[in-house]
Image (cartoon, rainbow, N blue to C red):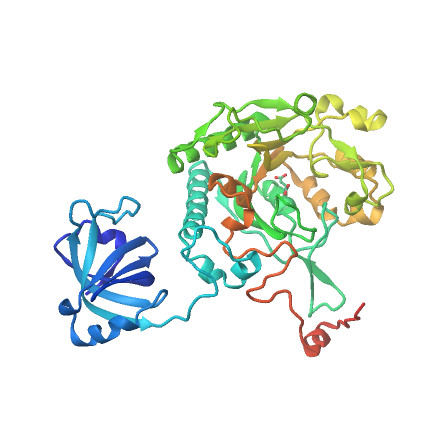
Length: 473
Ligand code: ASP
């Protein structure tokens, strides 16, 4: 017999089925036992009556404990009226087992899997993430993430976007954050960098005539942990478009997420339709922050208050943390990033009063959190050069972006884009405060993976091969 999923058994009352999965729980009632069997589609109650089982199964019956992997053959029967379980999708049926096979035994897990309180520490949960993910809530979050990714891919492909994967082994450039470096074995003394974002590639793809690019893009930034971002690596829905005005970029993004919420999250409602487009200065004045929570009922997890913030200043005053933007000798740091286009009418101010220049930056705010940012880009090398000068770039630093300026000599279309953060967006949609609850294998806050024990030491031979010497502090 072919194994079917638990949800497929619901409509097979009277039929014999073969189910496979894990023992979620076991209850003994005299000679009879009840098992909740779990597979990726949910739980079902299995009734074990010794008289209904064959010899081998009868012997297996007392051995069965939570998290054992089982094959159960049995008849689907409707539960007696009054015995239905409304909390279970399969609550109208149960399986009267005729045959049991223990496929694999399981030790007692280091924490209770079926416990909603998740009392185990995060360290323990991440060390045994494969058990933690068995919990219904976690399984639901991971599935929901998959559904969101699928929706975005379908939507953007339907709107003429091309999914393009850009390199992971790339070049270190002073783009904004600290790079993760990868030593080159072949070219000793040289390093690749993991991309902070595909920003430069996606702009080059616009020069290539792709016009509409997207990617569910992994991004790597060697930053200290922040509450609203997973440390080390995170995913963006990275998009770039040519020949579009800022409003068109916002329209497209807004329509995609609005239709996604309606299709995938019918229980949620949007505070605004269309979403407000607020000027940065007004927002800061009115709310004291540039990511205001505009929900009418801030306690309501099902309310989604999306809003756009636009008209940002091109520059902020540089802080010590902005060191990676420039030489540290300038007072200006980009508010978004160095490729953001200043408003045409403010171009003269670049010479006279840079702090007053406004840009085509757009931030996407949801329930008081920034879930994405983007901008129209500079495509005039002279303007780019000026921005670099203002953020204090040295000639050497500018040289690191020579490929982009070179590309712009060969017919660059006006372009712009956005990169909503996938992890943050999914965590809000899933009603999770902690972003790590929607990532299958996240790093801990201290940038460490207790499961794989990463980062880890490497052998002397590995270092030698790379021409590296490790000097302990
Ligand atoms: N690359 C930008 C970022 O990571 C997003 C964008 O401008 O599209 O913030």
